[in-house]
Image 1: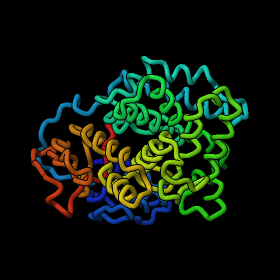
Image 2 (image 1 turned 90 degrees about the vertical axis):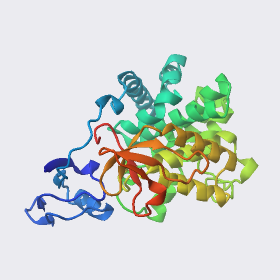
Image 3 (image 1 turned 45 degrees about the horizontal axis):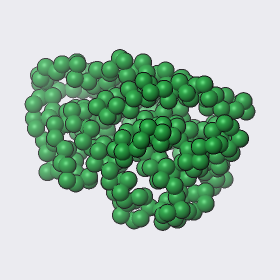
Image 4 (image 1 turned 135 degrees about the horizontal axis):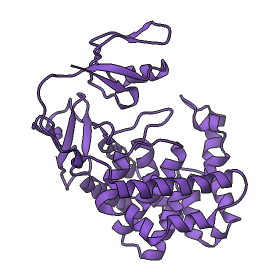
Length: 359
């Protein structure tokens, strides 16, 4: 059975069901080609937007749409928050200062409590497609993850609001970085990388002349979220206790969300692959151990019931996660009812969390 797929939702292991042609009519991929990450990237480079995939005709279990539909109330709040944050960023880009009214609306208790509700936030931010400005989505998601971390770290209301604010504004300095650099496909040269790294200084400079300058921890979170505990970060190569707690927290959230998203220069990663990266950085002394382990253990627990794409192209639901080891793969159940412990299948693992559209 042939089914048309957008290129953006293709997964490794899928089999091409019909020759794929480029705009000149040349064959990009032949029928029966099995996709991998390199072939999917090649389709993007050729500006191919959809392909036909050959799917098994075997019957799959009946699955209730309610299991993976987006929560309409959550989506409404997210879209409203995205719009407000975008306005804040774009106004700052024009040199018109910080829109405090919009930030107050984002941080209103009713809005932030819903956005940062542990029972829904994790599944929802993975289920929704990121349509629009990547930087704004990234900042919004880091703010939401900061709200979750504030709960997991047992922050009182005031520091909870402040770390959410710091997460939301963590990328505001990128409004001063040329968009052709931010959106460049491929490796940045040293001069371009230097310009990107300066976004933390730009963000700090924007905030220190705004009414938010009185919130020292907020500004330090923005300035320091690319510092690393071993002194290998930027802008000031700070170490350990010289880095603020907000800086240490947002550093981890920034890495996680950036790796979990499709970007102009890289495809999204599986959360379980990201945990491997975070764990290695903790072991090497780059990231704070206590904060990093709390984040990974708590976030992993929230993935129960989520839908994922496997490296063989199949879809499955997470039904169990080992609570003892942050680097383990989950146990999943496929649409055909097969239960697989991915820790026992070295050639099969989670490739990505699936959005509602992909499911």
